[in-house]
Length: 349
Length: 278
Image (cartoon, rainbow over all chains, first blue to last red; front, side, top):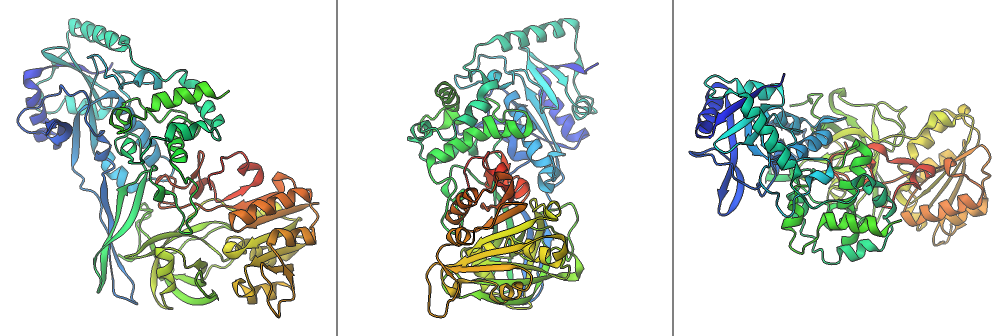
């Protein structure tokens, strides 16, 4: 039987303190900083009334920049390479919304399937996601339900919290989650029958909240495949300024760049650094010859949308988009992935 | 650290430049580098696979392995001076140490082609990716029927592997061409696809393998189809910009396929079903 507990909201900080002390967890939670919800190491008061964070929590396993190794080489001699592996600190991330938990599942598929990415893995195995169910009316840009998710989904989470007013219902999803709930000094109490009943009702109401939707998402991969040469893409992308904010804020975008950054020239010294990269930039695919397989914004918008709704589905059997709506709400020119997928589906036989 | 933990695929192995040969001079010059793994810490490869080469401080570049897998002592790479890393390669000397990781990608199904006629069609530096197949087939000459090699460059000075191609004439039919003829050039004058039409190799029991500039491949393909070659008989190898080599950095995809994993070798029967994003 799954582990269910109840946490008095006034004792949330006690649980976090117990996790830090008894479980050696560094706890992060959303904090409102200059009007932006951002994951921060917890301070005095943890509040979890955030709609969602500006950035998804993917940076906990895939940081914006990280050093892979450093090198030092005297010209004409063999270089000395020193691997830089991530700090093995365990990090518990509170307040992760279900769309972002499902984002983590997709990131894991990319980085942990087939050939293992050692840097991602080293971080990911030490990260626990303590999710928070969405039981207030969804944002105008939310569409998790139509892409296979739910405001109460536990996918990718270790624990799911549900706000029951003056207390949280706490449900373990993984063994890690169970251990966190049972940590020494935990103020969690057993859930009563009334609590279980209430959480069911709250979840039912959350799932029943209307959202905007990708129409007929099952057909999207085939429709997009058929749309590849459609002139519609040019029309859809005409407003795009190629800023790339859609992908930088996406919980499932995983593209990256690798560069050498020099810190000295004699001997040659520096670091090989991984940074986030972006399929909306022309340089991303441009060959040294100048030839570019995705040479215009139409091809690059098509790549983003087809990756989320076609290619990833063809490779992993699931849509890559989790419906968080960040790319919709943050796009400076109002390009809306839901509208794009729906319009393509309408226009393609 | 002189050797790599086996689980960190991003950490290159070290290789020493044992030999450098200038193939083509000029603005887009090509040099062939022979790399020997330091301390024997290397890897085997198959025909068509690539490796990520590093110059520390400049970065990495994905390059086709141009030597036959039968050669274990070294790996050879023919590199055109065109970008940041490839230009830095051209400034290196024998004895310099570089990084290498791989091998990446799929390979030409050479074993499936036993008993067949092999027709190679290369242009420019597109001879390098198919050179390991040519040299492997020649080394196992009895396994194959006719071996024919078409190769062309812009001018006689742009012909790479000149000496090797002359040597190849003893075991294969070699048809060279240049786009613009010059005094002293006795072979075909015109584009590579035209030379193929001119010699008209029959499609019976044959496999055609082509690599070169996209425009050349396009017309080679049309001409092969006109000669009666079926989609399953035509192979090519494609390149896209790459950073990771393991299907994660996201830039080399053609539709759902990351070329660094599912490619670079495709039959036309496979490639025609993918979007044209290469």
